[in-house]
Length: 193
Image (cartoon, rainbow, N blue to C red):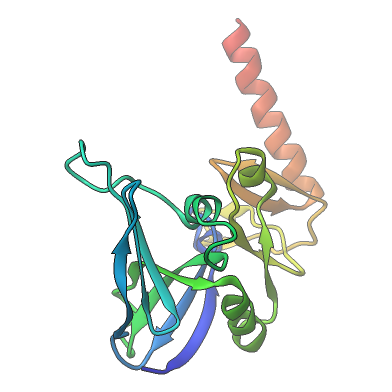
């Protein structure tokens, strides 16, 4: 198995309010290099080439708990390297990304520098405030991400600040920051009356 390409998928460019995600393409399915091991608190972790797969299962629950790399990083800090969640693509099939895979932070940063240098992986302040250690793709020179639904594209002007909408950081220009603030003020006024 060989990593053939990596990129940051930014759904905000398509008008979707989802966080950016590191995507990695490999030429074949990764083989198990370290068999998954279950720990006494329900966590399972294994290595598949350079990738890590993990889960947490509460013995009383039917399905595994939804956990993220941030949960893994806190649980296994000092024991395993810090990881970043990715979407894995096998071959040229860019329609079926596999979730549940992660990469150690140092390897993920190498891939981002090599294949998509306009981005960096930085710690999420919001996640850190909540007690998680999550590294997120952040664009080094972002443009305004206001989405014109009628034109099917983003504004693209120089941003003046970032706002958080549905847990996604959006860089906005002065015009769209004012528009956003006016809309929020109108919603607050409607609730108050």
